[in-house]
Length: 173
Image (tube, rainbow, N blue to C red; front, side, top):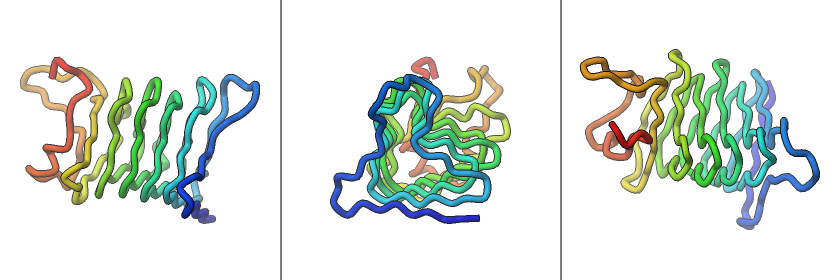
């Protein structure tokens, strides 16, 4: 597989779309055998029905922002998303849709989206590393929980302290 590392040292790096297309595009596609390392890049304002990142490989986000997209990051069953820092916010539909493997640690923010972290597939796995005391992660469970029937959202690594960094997107729970 191939590896691509995008780093912005000037704090002005933006991946965006300017044109007449209105749907069906993605800002970044990470193929099954590829790895993308992202440092301090903003991915924003892609057209309707588009993804900021369509991930089938390995995506390592160290800092930066995905915002003002319809779906910012979608990780498919073949993909892995390691979020060590950064922000996913202000999207019109889903911040992060995880169908594969995802690990969160550090100063991560997945909040302010209609659906923040959507664990939409039953096989999706979320591992929690050490989170900063400022980390914020909103969760959208794959279905509405019923009394006495908990839903597994985080598969490993959660501590009492890191659990405080998670909130439900559904105000009824």
